[in-house]
Image 1 (cartoon, rainbow, N blue to C red):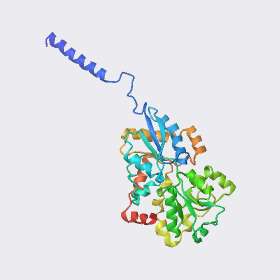
Image 2 (image 1 turned 180 degrees about the vertical axis):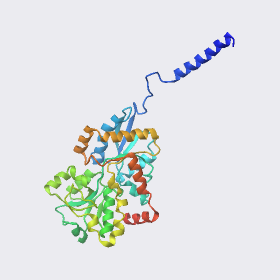
Image 3 (image 1 turned 60 degrees about the vertical axis):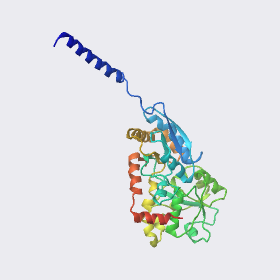
Length: 351
């Protein structure tokens, strides 16, 4: 090889090396995190001041700390339909870029299972981030009403008025289940925009009773109501009894024998009590971004300052959360039911 060729070869090699160096990050530098300088929209499926709004704003203060790039998080309230308005929005309108998440109303998936036309989302396809804790249901009424126990509710010719946000809400589904099991016809009063507003409806005498989770008694005004004996507890979900409310009977204990087929479906219909305060992103979020959100969610729940605030502001037990992966699998297993089971559930929950 002559000298001119050697020089030319060296020039080619040097040019290639220079191109590689110029196209790569400088030594000691890493690629900019996707979330750096960005803002995540956190949609709260309730009005301002509601428990869902409170939990959303709590998460907005802490989640960004545990996502690489430390994005800002802005809460947007979107109430309506017991949570269906915001769920439909996240599914159909929000971009699947990892910059939108939702505080989901945990019973909305049941609306999909029974085929309500208002549902325009497949809850199996949401990108689930995780949930806060378990929250089994209970039933309680104002102590100044004629209803002193569950037997009185069943015997009354005028069933109690039960405050509800909408047909997609947790409490509405529990109330409909009680209707079928005990052959009653609770008068569901819908239209309340939040749990707090429903509580006010109780105090104003607009409704007589609430069907809600046992964790509700931790927060105001329920903690005051319990102390003042303003309310009387009648019934709880079961089969295990809650240690947060008085030892009232469970649905399993009081259900008549002929209701056993319906009671047997409770593990499906009330599966939502396993995942209180669930969070999701739209379908098809890139896997790497979804993993960052899921990891950040778990780390947030382990934050000591977060725990102090959560236990002060919310009905949170700090122990029974589900990861995003666990919640994704549970949602799929609950919704994927045989046709005969879905038919029976639809019959139970139909108006």
